Amino acid sequence: MYRPRAKTSKRAYPAKDYPTPSQKKVVKIDVPETQNIEYPIRINRYLSLKNYCTRRKADVIIESGKVFINHKKAVLGDKVEESDVVEVNLPRDFAPETRTYYAYNKPVGVVTNLPQAGEKSIINITKFPKKVFPIGRLDKDSRGLIILTDDGRITDKLLNPKYVHSKEYIVRVHKTINENFIKKMSLGIKLDDGYTTKPCEVSQLDDQHFRIVLTEGKKRQIRRMCMVLNHEVLDLLRIRIMNIELGELREGQYREIKGDDLAEFLKSLSMTNPKE
Image 1 (cartoon, helix red, strand yellow):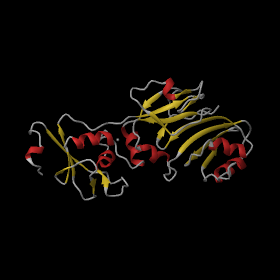
Image 2 (cartoon, rainbow, N blue to C red; image 1 turned 30 degrees about the vertical axis):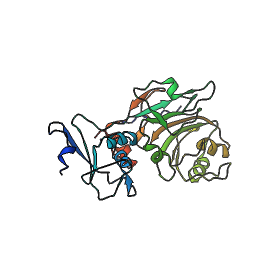
Image 3 (spheres, helix red, strand yellow; image 1 turned 120 degrees about the vertical axis):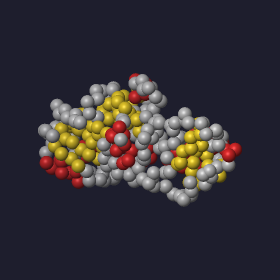
Image 4 (cartoon, rainbow, N blue to C red; image 1 turned 90 degrees about the vertical axis):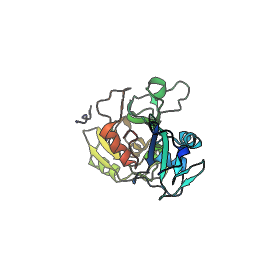
């Protein structure tokens, strides 16, 4: 049985709008250069893209009169141009919201979400310190890495097919594989619905195990690719999503993604680290 090796091993405003000098905390807001946005943009979304707070919380702060665009108090619905200066005037003890990201090793038999009668989902069987949800899915019969978070901003950036993100798997099939099998898998397979999969990286590990790296995510894609070549998948283990690796996580366990791993992950999604 093949076992993957663990990885060894970031103006002043009118005086009436300010709190007293000992209380004030003026934060200038700039959307990171890596953000690809179209101006003008609503002020609440602008604050959200900066990782300052959610849109809902931004609305509350705006209504309280603490957000300024070009030194003028903002109101709900205001839009920001690229050249505008946006600042937030809040008490010194206020801290921008932080978001949480977990790497989780999903066992076989557990569904990612929306369990049917008699099924168990990740959230059903695992208690997380914070309320989070899975990004994407992993088939009930498959196991391995899935990312859970409370950051809804990354969902589209991680799952939308227009973005290219790699995911790595170790697969065991029911009979011997050969060079022809590896070549056909890597060049692309025409599936039962007529869709031809994109070329991908495939390498043989032993007689029945191979490694595959996909940059797309069609439903049950690897199983369907193998079926076209008359091979049945007996075990499918996801070991990596972008730079996040499964490592030594045991089934049902999770760890928080943080530090350099989180910084690299968010940078690849054109986001910034909310804890910086």
